[in-house]
Image (tube, rainbow, N blue to C red; front, side):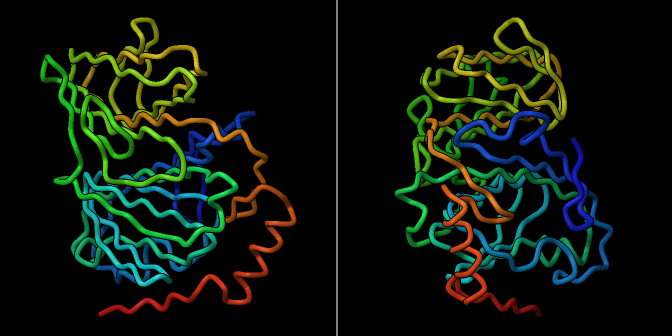
Length: 279
């Protein structure tokens, strides 16, 4: 479905209808746009805002994202790269298209998804991690037509440097028409696949296409994909946390009382301060 986030129109495959989460995954937003150029960086994107209790993760596909946060991290990641922020006990950050992209215009596309944190990790010190396209491990299928970027976890002997709160396998898929690959996952993991574009045959029985999400409901220890048309997709797999989830805007905790504490701590300045500086 489409959602309006402060004037930005996004595709939101999760949550939707009666599906609130696919533990540990809480939300998926897909933003694709063509920036016209002639803009100031400070006038576009998402300005300073807080998070606590989970990891917002951004896969950049086109363009660039400039990250700044109250812990002093500042970074620009371009297409093919990933920004992974464990928000822990609280952090304020901003996410804006890169300065050159704002000025010159161009294609801009990203997916952001939220990964819940176990209760034991929700009040840890926050941290920011990033991997560029060049440093993302890639596994290629035997037919040479499926390319899998390993963003979190380990796959076919390739392991990501990202440290997640709980066991996660997060993959980027680029599947050419006719390409096939089987991807093993632990059967007790929850798993979902979301397509940016193209058309796939999944597990030799189901066909799916652009802007569609498939939830596997722990029904197999292998996911087989075949490209019917050239396709980009993400595959998110994770060990369920199995704890109560209480949410309020940018905070994800285990109870209403913890949410109230998060709001109070933010208002009291306990999550730090972010003052953006622009040229």
